[in-house]
Image (tube, rainbow, N blue to C red; front, side):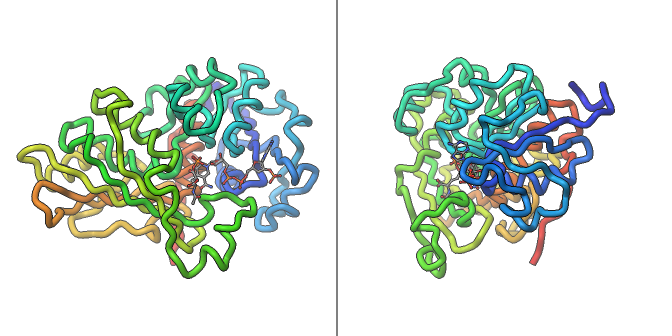
Length: 355
Ligand SMILES: NC(=O)C1=CN([C@@H]2O[C@H](COP(=O)(O)OP(=O)(O)OC[C@H]3O[C@@H](n4cnc5c(N)ncnc54)[C@H](OP(=O)(O)O)[C@@H]3O)[C@@H](O)[C@H]2O)C=CC1
Ligand SMILES: CC(=O)N[C@@H](CCC(=O)OP(=O)(O)O)C(=O)O
């Protein structure tokens, strides 16, 4: 179904609407010219109104939250999944094939079932769907996303990291076997569920590295770096360390790269300028300008800066996104737009919120 083929609005459901990515998807889709929200699901909050769960979204006439068991799949053309890992695959497997799926969880991102089982604590239960899924890093997979029924949106850290690295790896400008990624995220990246490390007293006024060199986004980044470098995934290992930062949203990655012979930071900048020219949501900053999370807050934008390193033969690429927009719900809507033949930017045009 394309928007040009029918004037009817696309009927969209959000599974996991009571979570943070679900709330952000609701906020963005409320302004989407071609989408009507017809189904919202929750687990513990099933039966509650949107106003009860998210007071800031009250008064927009959204449907109440229902459990997945009570969902009417005939009421939707597409579902956005903001569900925990493992849960999505079970639920999606029961859906009619006519419903398109934009998944924000990690269930369909990893192509190798063994790697999935190793990092996500068990066998995948919907391998046929995993094979069908297209990796939804829109800027790099646009053509495949257009034709997909099931899109697996990248994790928030991989989104920023891969936008910053894949064009350089593909062009042979940096060594794919020497990538160090120093990543920071706002606390909403951990979801709305109660967790000790995201309590105000534990996350506030401090900076905490976690999952040091053992985060499940490392194999996802390695999968894509390997693909774009023409290597086997098993041969690529990246150094990836995430940090929790006391801010509600935003994400920034500082990527330390080794330049290929005779290449300079200026070559990296030229590659980005060529590659991302005309991209509606990726902005390569002018030399010297420093990416900050404040530049992208509330928007679907990704800003990138390239810097010389004092160590000869090395450079730094810094990228910032909003984890709840480009890092999840915004990118998911960008993908949905392509899947339905809409303007890629529909519903996503808002400028960043500052201060
Ligand atoms: N937060 C972020 O920045 C990003 C998150 N993601 C991924 O997106 C997904 C959603 O994340 P987020 O919104 O932060 O998570 P939240 O924890 O905030 O929300 C999870 C949602 O799933 C529902 N849910 C939980 N268990 C079940 C179940 N067994 N059956 C049906 N529904 C269930 C919850 O319902 P209820 O509240 O009623 O219990 C809630 O609506 C996760 O896979 C996450 O890793 C990806 C990129 C970025
Ligand atoms: C701050 C924080 O806790 N962030 C989450 C990443 C959220 C996300 O993008 O990832 P997934 O969809 O892969 O879960 C984490 O590190 O687990």
